[in-house]
Image 1 (cartoon, rainbow over the protein chains, first blue to last red):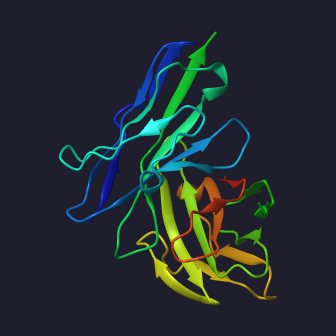
Image 2 (cartoon, helix red, strand yellow):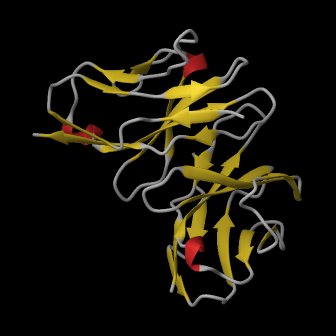
Length: 109
Length: 113
């Protein structure tokens, strides 16, 4: 069965510092990985997915199949990046994403 | 993008009572989902609904739970006899196509006393 692990419940950084939110997954096949974000009092929304190879709001994430990781990175954090971030995995056998427990990112001024 | 509206935003109920959570997606969307998140835990899949039928469900989705789309618009999640451990944030989500991303509602916070 597939599993998504986000080892950090909370990540606290200062504005302008680099950010890396970790995500590891367990799945033997070819997965599809996503990052979802939930800002305070807003709904969960897609931030980016690995197949798009895009940078959204300065965030990037690279799928590393060797390390089974999909870490989310941003070189210079902004206060408005403070939110809950969820890594999610979807496999070929199901269209239903499996979510990690989430990491709360707090960016201090 | 079209929104998914969930009502109510908060629901407080006594243990053993029935609750119905509602989701109002756009009528031409075919794929719907319910997820829940217990405080401090991960977002968990409950059930998916395609073409007016359950397509997949998790172990959490036992006989206490049911879903339906009674009027072709509202998508409801019913919990027949609530337990304390049902207290969670319940999210409805929709998807327009097989490989499209999920769009989530703002959630219903259910508190079972």
